[in-house]
Length: 318
Image 1 (spheres, rainbow, N blue to C red):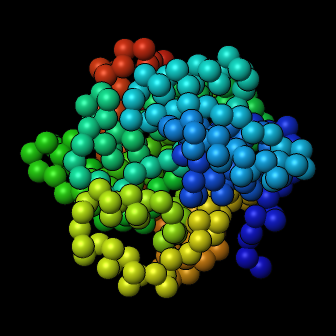
Image 2 (image 1 turned 30 degrees about the horizontal axis):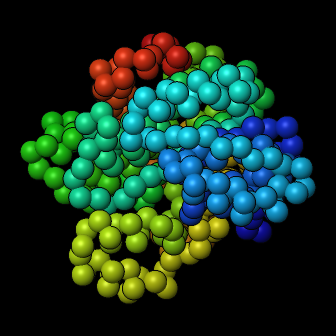
């Protein structure tokens, strides 16, 4: 029997934060959670788009859920720190953090603090946000952090010698690197949480090939005539954003998840279908590489944004 959004347990009384909730996977994730009674914080870069999303989601909230807005620009670590503080001051707690927002296949450009944009938004922004929010997740019953990766993790490689693509840049290699970093972060975070005695679960999920605004944004940014043709040829493989959101909803709510679990679609080699446990990119299983990425990510955040503090994170223990 396939797992669908109707299997989501009652979320009444739970507080969820979804990044990139104004469209695509984030919007569908927020819709499913608020329909089951959760209070969902729509964490978005654009306030007008977030307000439109809230209006669209209000009917789903009629059964007892609630919606709130949070300004969050993952390309600017100062707003990440500010957003985390606002959650702590406004609510003092958090039950679900879904690191969903992302960009894909962009020509090289930089974040506010000078990081390559795909690595900076997809990985570093969520790295900093998660660690800043850990204090309000700790101690909450069944608290979970879900980091959304993609099938691009399987061909990704962390280029520690040219992490920001300064010497050589390929937009798809940079995307694969950021998505591999997502799943490496999720696994390493679970290890550190367990070492610290914390009950918070860290999980990862990928949507398969889902139709979202990432594809048109990539086409518009690249100016390529070949890319839209490729997407048209691949059209029969694409599933809806609602289907693509199911693996992260499963990770966020299903009772049967396992620590550091990784979930994705069950058909066509993980391109579409119903949520199921799926294999992790072999590169993400190398503990030394995960720890190196963690340390470097922490140093980059510290250097770029002195207000961000590693002390908010669980302390690693041998």
